Image 1 (tube, one colour):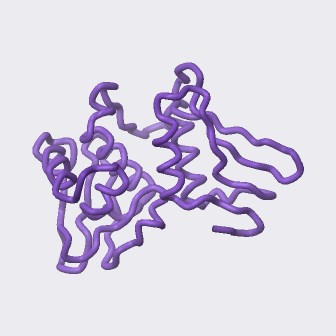
Image 2 (image 1 turned 120 degrees about the vertical axis):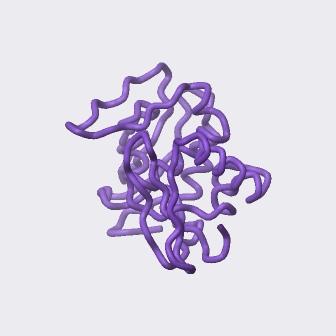
Length: 193
């Protein structure tokens, strides 16, 4: 995807590359290349959030055209301090690596960026789960444990998920967002609840 002369990788590609570097300190990949970053681009926002959480380092390589690179830190990096009044999602490291933890983190990113809640199938695809039924089981466990609250509006609209720890919620929408636009997360398709 190209905007203003800068090329960005697709959201699904970013998520897949980030997952592929898990457990590999110092591993990196490019997420944009061109004259300047668009701060409103979802991939740029996701990279910035990972940096704020202390999970990534961002670098610019300048050999002609600037290349924007995200790198897993070699050692634990402290997260940037929260803005005044901001509540952040804090997870036990063991829980964070579980299916529920990964789903909660993904739903939290949706809420942080004002994106709609993903469908069960999109959650399964993004989290590399067996199928949408496994995604629904994990989703239901998060709800039952009190980590998320859900509201389902009228038919044809996506459910809205509130992350209890932060108070942030996903966006209302009456349409589905294609999985390729999930830089950070998609919407639930009507009828797939």
